[in-house]
Image (cartoon, rainbow over all chains, first blue to last red; front, side, top):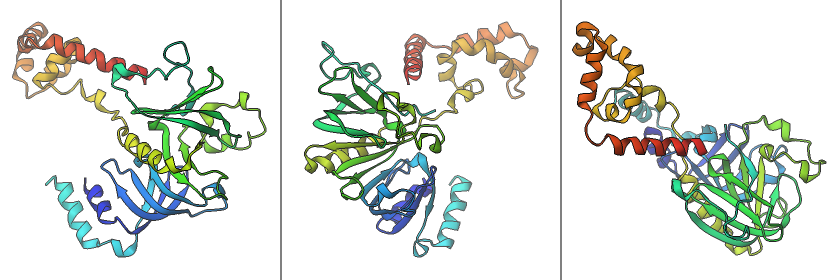
Length: 93
Length: 231
């Protein structure tokens, strides 16, 4: 649940979602649910030469299970806070 | 593992009605959209049909050819999006990517083959083009809701069944008691199994713990197995 809460805090920020099929989509994080399904707005494909037909889709829903990485905006990462949160989660409390 | 896109022709009634869905396992029809074309891969749009969205899958049935229809489980839909840019596709549509379990590259370069020879299970892209583009946002919303109804199935549960000995599970899994009594008796914390290794005694004790709900539970288990078998 840690990542769910964390991603919820990133709503409204720009992220890049890299899929397991190598497609990377950049967009504004619109919402995320408990399965880490991700909804992006104003999306654009990072490698447009490879995926020309996805040039511009406005809204995009990405299934959580196909996400490989989410590239975060630097200003959205509070390292100390995350550190504490992950430690707490690991302790199970 | 993901089945990808497949043929679907089971219709209710005289083979002309709505698609046959798995209501026994809780599948429900969420939405029906008339006058929707389907574009599979890089193919050309297929004659208008009717789009059905159930809690488990997306179905498209041709209005003209009763033997023509497709289905794809939400579990296999990696992403879906609203595509309105004419450069991306001439008509506004719902764009979907389908997980096939195959290597991506295999599906490339098969454009020249005629559509009959197209291997549906290797199709990685599908577009749904409604004749009325104002429906796109509604369609997108329903896609989102249904995708959320279909999280990844948890697979490693089965393994644990042999090891956990809660009272509930003893009642549930009488069939497995035979196999698991060894684990039970080898468990040093279990005074019963440890005392003399008398397996009949172990079984007797296990049976004593089984309450009267066992038959209800057994039925439920059967149900579960059935549903797993079908998907």
